[in-house]
Length: 139
Image 1 (spheres, rainbow, N blue to C red):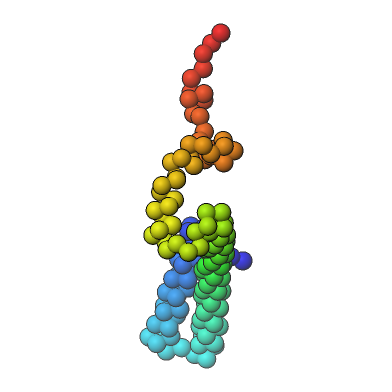
Image 2 (cartoon, rainbow, N blue to C red; image 1 turned 180 degrees about the horizontal axis):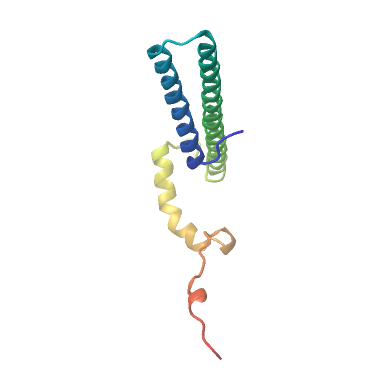
């Protein structure tokens, strides 16, 4: 079981805090009272149960954090791979392997406007035309 959102994480942390507070209450009760053997055993069992609950909540939180870190790591790896591939294509087609990063940027700045103006529509960034959504003319 993993935590899927911040609300679940907050809830799990609250559960953990409640379990810890309950453990402290049990320990205070244990320290402040003269208890017979059976009462001590009950309190010990209750304390063990509360510690197990706290442990399960902590495991749930840790799994969630690890899963989130894993997803971020995969996204970063994917992005890094994409950047490397695009850089290799840039070097190949613009014969820019011998250029420094600054020189490559200057070269791209020189041609960027021209390329973007002549770029076929299928390669242009798509923007949605919202004007058609709000204005309707009746026949």
